[in-house]
Image (cartoon, rainbow, N blue to C red):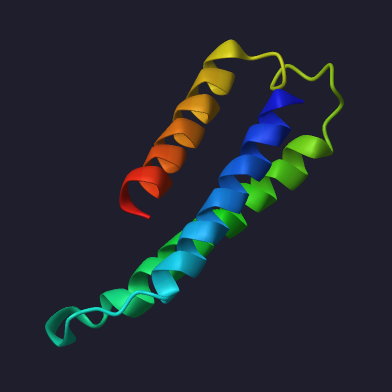
Length: 89
């Protein structure tokens, strides 16, 4: 169930980054970033939420929940998104 929690965590952070990025005012020559960045992080949040829902429907004894490489990859993504929020946001 740690994977489900990590997926929801990444979903929440991506939503927060999308919200914060929508408040930023960009230079007129790169104004398109004001639309692109929130859309990208919003899409990542939807993807992470879908993964969390799908993983939550699997039984706790499923091999995906017991996979250490998958858990390490999910933890690396969560750490990366957290650092992105802390350093940039």
